[in-house]
Amino acid sequence: MAPLRIAIIVLIFANLLALALWKGWLGGAGSHGEPERLSNQLNPERIHLVSAQAPPAVPPVVARPAPAEEEAKAPAALAEVAVEALAPQACVVFAGLNAEQARELAARISKAGTGFALSEKRSEVPSSWWVHIPSQGSKEGADKKVAELRRLGVDDLFVMQDAGPGQYAISLGLYKNEAAANRHLESLKEKGVRSAQIATRGAGAVRIEVRGPGDGLATLVSDLSERLRGASRLECAP
Image (cartoon, rainbow, N blue to C red; front, side, top):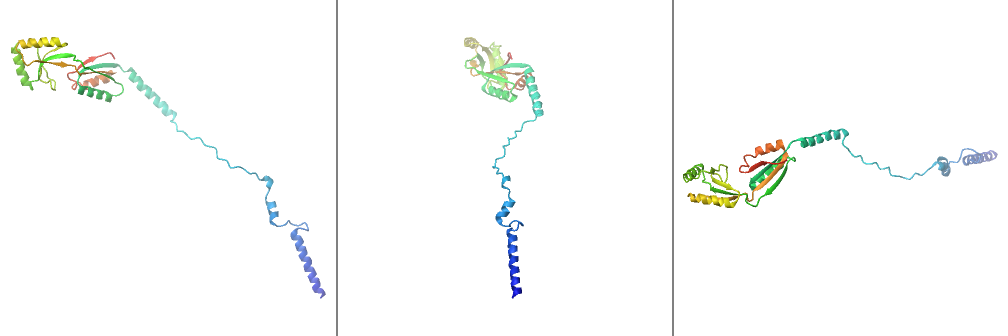
């Protein structure tokens, strides 16, 4: 029995020794418990809380034309203005236009560019009184009537050639006032002319004044010369 008791005593001392070593009672390695591990792993004094902040706003990038482009455009614009300023200016007045001619002239001026200025005035009072024989319908009819008038002693006459309602009419005189036109009509009747009559001219006629570069205005007037027949054209101060 003595050896058994000795063995049991040795086992008890061995267990006690192992327990002392595990608890650190003999100054050995530290405990392996969870609180001790946390205290060894963390350094509270080195931990700093940082509040979340939004990143600084980045100002938008605005695209601007390159300085070279701006410098290139500026001389071109100045040169265009200088050319318009140095171009000789001219002025033309178109008087006695009918409504259709006035519309066409205004449309052509608007298409010609910004260098032209147009002013329009409509007349409501007759500017002249026309003594005439209405259109004879054809050149042959007009020639026959002219021969008849010459036999009656009327030599101051003119056959209208321009296309329109007045073509082949026979003009016997244009007067600035109605009294003079009536006197001439009476003298024609005394000679035996019965078909003569008086018509007012200028009532409702349009007067258009155009100012602009001389070369461009001359070209415009030349292009419209055929369509503005019957209208008077005068120069005016630019």
